[in-house]
Structure formats: C-alpha cells, structure tokens
Image (cartoon, rainbow, N blue to C red; front, side):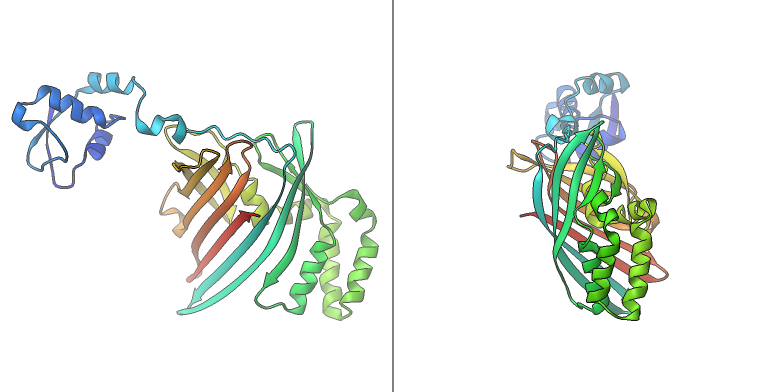
Length: 318
C-alpha cells in the first residue's frame, strides 16, 4: 500500500493513469476499504487529504478484470466492410481558405458524388464513381472546361481491398477506345488556344494509366471514403495514416457514444497534436450493418511559407 497526498486538480482518473490502473473506480474502492471512517471518499477528492493507493500486485489484479470503460465493446467496434449492392449519392462540399498578411481568401464548391458497387473479383471490390451537379463561386471558362473534361470520363473505376482501402483508380475500356472523339467534342465546345493546351495535358494524363491513378488518388472524396479508418480498435483507440494537402497525418480515432443503434460515430484527431504545425479534426458516421460511411466532416489547418491554410470537407448521404 502507498500513500498519496491529494493535490489541487487531482482526480481519480489522472492518479489512476499515473499508477497504470486501468479502471479508476477501483482507486476509490481500494481507499475506502482500507482508510479510516472519517477519510472515506464520497464524491470528489479533497486536496491535502491522504489517498491510499494499491501496490503493483493489486493494480495488476484489478487490471486483470479487464473491465475498464475504454475496453467496452461499444468503444472498440469491429467495423466491417460489406459493400455488396451499395449504390448511394452524397452531397459533397469543400471549403478552402487562406490567410496572407491578415487578408482572408476563401473558395467553396460542391458537387454530388455517386458511388455504386459493381462486383467482387479476386478479393477486390469494384466501384463506379461519378461526380455531377457542380457548383462554385467563380464559374470561369477554365473551370467549366475542367468540369466538362472530367464528366466525359465518368463513371471511373475504383478498386478497393477487403478492408475498404483504395487500391487503384482506372478508366473504363470504352472511354479509352473513344477518347479521340471525346477530345474532339470538347474542342468544339471550347474552341480557343488555351483550351487546346489544357486538353493536350488532359489527354496525356488520361492515356497514362499510372499518372491517372496517382491524380485520382488525390481526390478528397476517394481518399477519405476509402482510407484505412477501419483499422482494429484497442483500448478505445484506433490509428491510421492519410495524406492531406501533401502532408502525411497520423490519425487517432475514438468512438462517440450516441443513441443511434444502427450507426457508429468516429471522432478523429491528430495522434500527435503538434505534428508539423497541423491541426485536424474529423467526425465520421459509419453504418454498423455494412461499414459504409453515411456522413463525414473534416477540417485540416496547416501552415506553409507563413500562410495559414484551412480545408473543410464534408459529405452527407442523400
């Protein structure tokens, strides 16, 4: 048995953490079993008073009960991935802002993303992915060209492994076989030299499978929807990595308990809060039935060359 003199700000939780006692309820139980009657803890700790602590052997015995709150099944879900028959649409919004010399520059656009499961072959799931109903603040000619160019390729193929992680992105064979006609049609819609330059670069990406794959893996919807967030939970936490804004982020996620019995709410933060001057928060709602994301809200703040950037990304099943 050890004796601890309670300090201002001490709680059962932080003292239990210091002695590696997983369930702080046993700290109060142990003290009350061994203390004088007048020293019994009823509610909060009182600074200046003694707190009797279990020794290492007793702590181990308590921990062996394996009943700490963070070990409950609700806080350590096994998130499945069963997409067979999945066919849903999502309202997708991206807000970007930057602060340069105190001046705020903002941009926002949205679109409808469609995701349809097609088949499972050799352990890989194939999805068709489409974007439509674009809206933005500027609607310049080049933006319209970029949107129409991509729309001519949809639906694109997204291959995903058994854990729901993106493997590769590709174009359907029919698109590749008919790309000359697609390019000609786009040139007729946008008949100027700048459009021609853009479409030549576009053609280079389309006809080079590896480059197209790399470009599409940077799509915010795809890389967040098909990330490694389904990794195993242990002691109330799960961890995974993701690239956002050219930065590798180490994400820690926990479960937020709700009254919804059909879905799991995941709260995501940086594993290291000081990581590369980044700030990240995310809330992801996942179906318990198939492990597919129903909604997602992410925020990533980072500094680069004395400029503060913020990207907010959200999707909602419609």
